[in-house]
Amino acid sequence: KKKFNEYNFVNLDEVSSLVFDLGTFNTRIGYSGEDSPTCVFQPVVGISSDDKYFYSENDIRYFREDMKILNYMEKDGTIKDYDLFEKMLDNLLEFTLHIDLKEHPILFVEPSLHNKEYRKKIAKCLFEKYNIPALFICKSAVLSAFSCGKSNCLIFDSGHLNTYAVPIHDGYALQKCLIKSNIAGDYITQLVKEKLESKKIEVLPFFRIRKKRKYEGKFIPDYMRDLKADESNEQFWKNEIYRDIKENCLVSCDDAIPYNIETDSFNVTSMAQPITYDLPDGNTVELSEDRMLLIERAFNRSKTEPGFFGYHKNRNKIFFLMFFSFLIEII
Image (tube, rainbow, N blue to C red):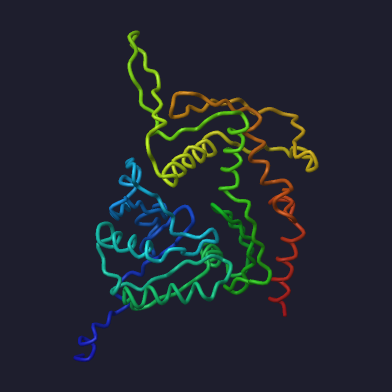
């Protein structure tokens, strides 16, 4: 008993473990056994010219001319900047969770594509800096399978930057049968950006627009184009507008739309109901058939992604994965 107290051992049966689910667009942290995460936030940090850091959503969304907005995640879902990640985690533990990681075991969610070096860096960071009592690293696809009560299944996971098709056998992800594609949520967002640029529609962040009153009592936008802003800050807000257009305006079509990859065009036979989106400067964007056609890019062949025939048309690869996983189970 004396030795137990001397080393401050923690009885892991009496404390709740923490789940760390880091993504390229959202980071989710919470207690195991609960229905929803305790906190959900974007993996970005604001840095001013005097090296002052901003972590909360309100601080980052408050415009500062000298503030940079940096993302500490790589495109493959791994951590890019460990210093920023540790600063964010320190702020989160002190002001949001109000806990000490020394008292909580951690379940860390990693991308489905195996990366041994990434596991080593995560373990070194959490054990050496935060002195956690225990760590278990598990793949996202495996946890998705367990959440459905399955130990043998095929997981289709489409996120912000990547899409995975992962066969799960006896609770393990079969790495040699994994399929990865870069066509995901951000791909559609960039299509929205390209479509607006092709129509000569300029999207300005909210901080570049100020409204003044005319003598008739109406408001007209006053553009502050000379306002100094860091490029990362401006790009962050433009992407937020493109993403909002994607989430509120785009829809999928019930029927397949014929696509010609040589001309990179669709043979539109039906039209979606037009919708109007209000930009921050008061101008409007009207989308009609583009509401469906931009989404249909994810269900057709792509020039930029060789071998991609659409999520629903890659049935040969998907069936092969299922057959291979079931064959291993039989053997």
